[in-house]
Length: 142
Image (spheres, rainbow, N blue to C red):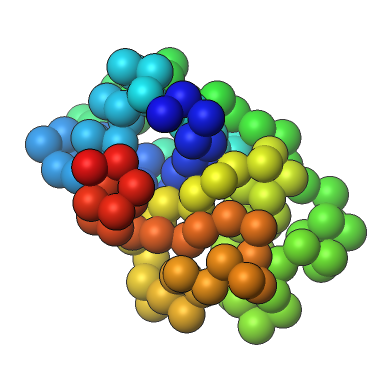
């Protein structure tokens, strides 16, 4: 299953560090076991760090430790953000989705159903699947 390239949204990084026994942390374990290739972007890391600093600073070392199993991909060019992502997606989320697409991720895993929910299971419009951690762990990697 190592051909699965799973992009982790900022809230997944945050949640894995905040709640080490949850589903997001299980995704990190899959990457550590090399069962999937985990990807994220510098923007996602900064956002996760900022939220942990505000809500649970003691979890920052857990975030940094989990990043040893995650490949950090480059930020997309603004033209790629415009070209590759739906314009109706939030402007704060479009660079994250574009980074996943440019990095050839097969899946974009997020807990942000409010912003990404309408794009879940709409592969016809996107070159990857947008899923929650639960969807990924039950449908793709049971």
